[in-house]
Image 1 (cartoon, one colour):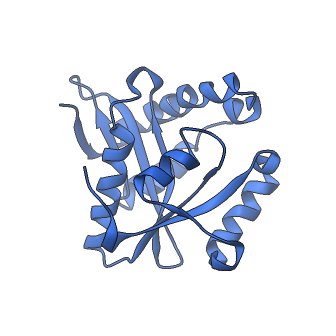
Image 2: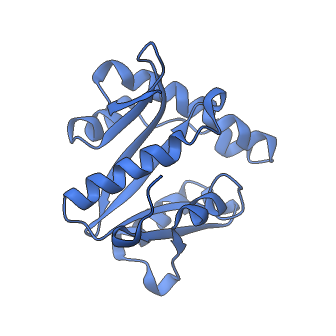
Image 3: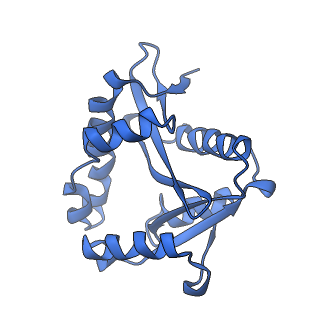
Length: 175
């Protein structure tokens, strides 16, 4: 079984490659701007990695094939990015990484995990809903989530329906 471990410095350029590959399916559904978007910078990835909130799933050669970086927003864990190389999709590596993030958040006394996502992309909003996340109304969005959504809109991501989601850690169902 592929291993899940903390990201190391040598992984960071590979995480960018994973992000570029994971973006390609967006082009197939007409979201070329998303597909062409640049991955997080090495400096950004390094910040998460050095904070102990960047994890990878690796293949038998210990090469990353999926990753998750976890932020902190308004007292909750926040999935900043989770991506799986499309060559390894459908094997629940994303769920495995999210489960790990939930365990980390529980161990650190956080009540919930949040994310922002496209609502009408099958492997985004509907997927997270199946995992146990729920959509937040605008009134439920915390100041930090509103700031993230504003930044996403300024980046052009609101050309497609987007929303914030949240899952309570106490009720999370692990695989």
